[in-house]
Image (tube, rainbow, N blue to C red; front, side, top):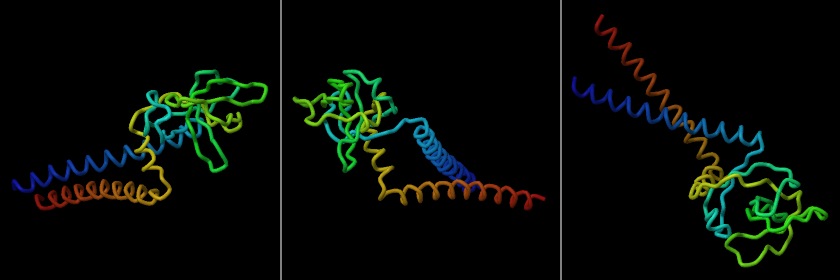
Length: 178
């Protein structure tokens, strides 16, 4: 009898943990999808060029913004070249006539060589969270997508499995008592 009490407690704990993490992952996924629809994007800062404001592996939250609303001192994220490399740097000069920005990383000694075209701007950085960028990179990496889906599915199956096991155990114990 004591074993079944411990077993039941362990099953309840495992059920709670699997349900909690499955729900958490689903809520985060839903939030990311909704954020994307309203023009908010998340990026990992992959270099130390924006230290100390946004150290390497910081997660930056970027809001799509009309380039004409960007001022000197704003931090923007933009696509640097045709390879699709995304960069986050501070605007040091706005050239409205040529529709470009001059940018510079906070930790860099010189301004970036190439001006940023307004059309290449992704948005304005709202805030950053140190160390979370690397987590985002792992979770969203193309090569990890199947693994992440498997983890979510396994957590959901585990959670439902614990629920089914508890219901069967309750039903079985009611039959035994009757």
